[in-house]
Image (tube, rainbow, N blue to C red; front, side, top):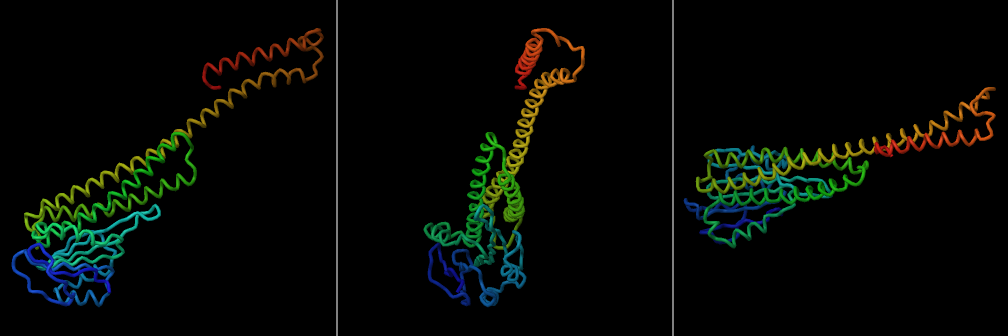
Length: 322
């Protein structure tokens, strides 16, 4: 059975457990409502909920699909909200989906492939009865805020990895694995941004537009969710820029180190060219050569070679080529 929790609430207190096929006649005000939580539901369970709470078929189809982008749909006097959950697993961001059916006196949350249950959230809200008296729109805010708060640890974990990679780049060349990881992280952040943008639009609609089941008093709470999403968006944008700068900085350092090695090789080649040239001239076996018959000619030539090489070495040292 995939029903996690199904309870009737009145005046901020849990009254009793209910079945998903039980239609409860709630009061006309916001003080009494039903909150049902389901994880990875079957088609039969969704069919029961559809018949009991008059849910729209298209919304049911989207909830079962489990691969929708965040959105807000209006079906008569009910609201259908889709949010994307995310968690970090083996260095990659894995996604799930939470769909919420919102009516005047009911809220039904449907989780698909989501690793974070709402059990803790429900306990926290039940521990503060005053908050539950606000009604189903406040619970919708709490669910969305719970989902968005799960984004922050993902970004912080990636941020720590990126900062460590940045420090490593200063002292070492990036290897193939590090470069592959950079591009993997950039790809993951781009995919994450594709979730954050519609999530921001969802929160913005809940704040700016008059929607069924959402009172004006609840809109400031959704504005808080919007601020959290935008904060994560800013962090993701900054991380993408840092990853780009790490790769470019590594390339610059590699080019600089390659340039240093090239200058050193060029300097040593110039120094070694002197004895090579002089030895090459004396190896031509001409009859008339300078100092050929002088008693100390051999030592004079060696001295000239050493002197020229020393002068070149000194000049290259001053130029910081060696």
